[in-house]
Length: 88
Image (cartoon, rainbow, N blue to C red; front, side, top):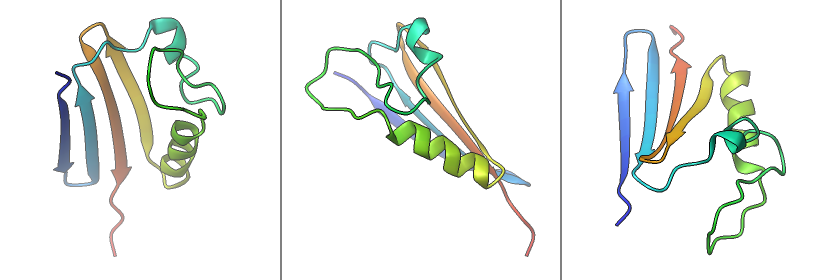
């Protein structure tokens, strides 16, 4: 059974969101292209994937001075995102 873990951390100058699963992982040769438009991972799945969601999400994070990255191996995948907090 695949487990999904979501963690939100409020740091002094940033907010960090981490989403982790214990699935089959994403092959290293596909990680490099994961945030490119229309380059969905080639994995067995019942879900249709257009390959635009992660590209758009990364652009949004970067437009606001943040970051979005991914780490993956055969034990699962972790998406790590961070946005800086701006003082009011």
